[in-house]
Image 1 (tube, helix red, strand yellow):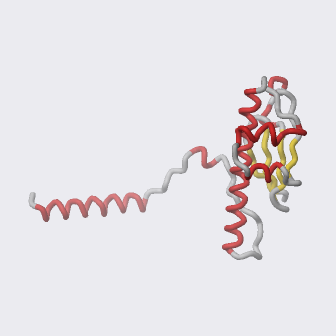
Image 2 (cartoon, helix red, strand yellow; image 1 turned 90 degrees about the vertical axis):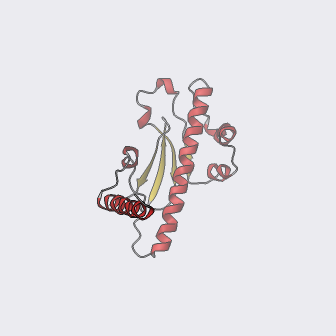
Image 3 (cartoon, one colour; image 1 turned 90 degrees about the horizontal axis):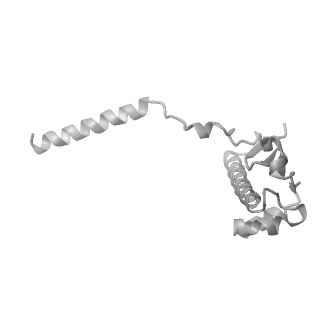
Length: 154
């Protein structure tokens, strides 16, 4: 086969693969279906303002996940006990190592109530450790087992 034949064959393969990619529905990984879409009900705002709100909410959700991971590492290091309410910031900052979390801990809408020791809980996935009121419409909740949920106040 000469050079022109290889070029035509390569173009045909690209066209066929493109057609297959366009007609098939993309598969969503199973972990992506566990979280609700991040949306705030605000019809009067423009699309860019809503996009900015959703980006800020996603960032706060990510920060809360990092706080949850730091809290679980602390619990494992300290004989399955949670940090005391009075010193949550100084207990978790060695695990977080970023100054942006100090602003989160000092936020008046960030509420921490230490759960009982991990060994004494029957179902830690139902025990709330932290509630962060991030907007008038939504709260971010950190549970005692370290998972995070976004809850709307509707």
